Length: 607
Image (cartoon, rainbow, N blue to C red):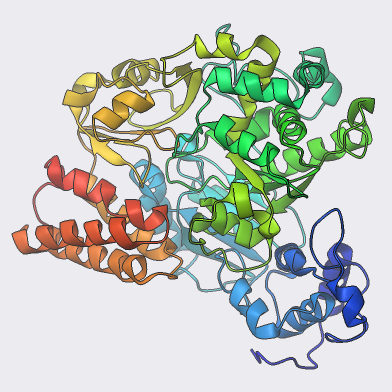
C-alpha cells in the first residue's frame, strides 16, 4: 500500500460505507478550511472544529463490515475526509486484529483456541476444519478460518466468531464442524438466547433481569423498576449521589479495585470542561464474559447507570467502547441507546430535568490492550491503542485531554442499587473492604458454567460447588484470567474479597474462575497464556515487547528439555523486569500465571 497521499479511489460500496459514517467528503486534502477557523474550539468536544480524527476507527469498521477489508482506495478516501496522513491511518488500521489492509474473503471464521475452549472441543474443531475446509488462513470459495484468542464465550465452549461482510456478524457457541462449515458456506446461524445458571433466583441484584425481562423493550425495563434510580439521583443532586457512592465504598470490578468515588469526585470537582465518561466494555481477558451477559441481558440498566454517572460528575457526553467480537451485545446496546434517546432518557433534556447527557457507541476491533484505560482512550481518539504514561491520570487529562471517568460495565451497574437503596445498605453486603455482590465467570470442569452473582467474601470452594464442580477432583483453578494466577486445592477456602486475595498474594482480576480437572493439561494452558501475551503486547515498550517473547521461549524450553533450572530462573527474572519497567498492566502481569504454575508444581513432566 502506498503510504503517501495518492489518487487511489474507493469502490462504490466502500464509498457508500464511508459516507454513511462520515457524511460528505472534505473538498480537498488539508486545505479548504481557513486555518483560523480550524483552531477554534467547540464547547461540546473541546477539540478543533475540523479535528475529526476520532472518527477514524468507525470509518474503518464501516468499510471492513461492508466489503471485508480496507483497500488503498478506501483508506485514502477516509484520509481525505478526516485530514489524517495516510501513513498514520495505515498504522492505526494495521494495529487491530479484526481489520485487514490486505484482501481477504467476505466470510472469515475466528475459532477460539484459548485456554477456555481448547480443553473443551476447540482442538477437535480445528482438526476437523483442517481436514474438511483446508489450512488456516487459506481462502476457499470466498471464506477462510483463523485461530483466535478468547472470544468471551468460555461458558459455551467451543466458540467461533464470524466476520461476514455485507451482513451482521455472528457468534457460534458449542460449535461443531457442521456449524462452522455452514457459516463459511454462507448459512445463517440464529443467536443463542441469553441465560444464566441462577436465572430467576430471588437473591440476585445485578443479574435479576437477565433472562427474565425483555432486553429489547424499554417499557419492560421501566415496568421492572427501570429509571427509578435516575429519578432518585436527580432528587439527591450530584453531591448527594457522590455521597452515597462514598458510603457504599464501591471498588472497580475490572481488576484494579480502585474506589469509584475517588474517580468521580476528582472529575466532578475539576474546573475544566468538557468532562467525559467512558464505559469500558472491551472485555477481552481470557476467561471473562460477565459484562457480555449484562450487555446482552440488561442493556438499559447500563445506560441508566451511565446517565447517573454523567449527572454526578458533570459530563454531557459519554462513550461506550464495546468489544468487537460481541455482535449480539453490540446490537442490544445500540438498540437500547437509540430507544433511550427517542424516549427522552438521553439527549439535551434528560427526562425533562434540565441536564444533557448522551452516549456514543464505539466498537473495538480486536486488541486486548484496549482494555487498558489509556489505550482505550487513544483508540477512541483515532490512534493506535497504545497505553499512555501516567501521570497525568485520566481524571486530570483523559479523553481529548479532558477530565474523564472510566469504569467497566459491572462497576457502573452497581450504581443503580447504591442510589436507589442508599450507600450504607450496599456497604452492609459483603465485607468491609469488598462491599456488595460480585460477578464471577465460572468455566472449565464444572457442571453449570456461566456467570454467578455472590456476596463478596464467598469462598472459592462455595462458588465452585455452586457451579457443580467436584472440589475433590481439582488440579488447579485459574483465578483472575490469563493475567491472574493458578491456585491449587489447598487454597479453595480463600474468601473472594479484595483484602483476602491481596493477603494471599493474589488478585480477583475481572472475576475469572476457570477450573481444571484431573485430566487437564495445565502445561498446555501455560503455553497458550504465554503465546497470548506475546501476541497481544502492543510493542510500545521494550520490556514487554521483548519480555513476552523471551518468556514464551524459555517456557517452551523448560517444558520440552527437562525442566532446566536456568530457564526457570530466566522466567522469574524477565517477569520481574516486566513488572518494574513496563508502561502498563499487560507487561506487569504477563508472567504472573506462568510463574504461579511453576511455583505450584503444576506443569507436569517435560514433553
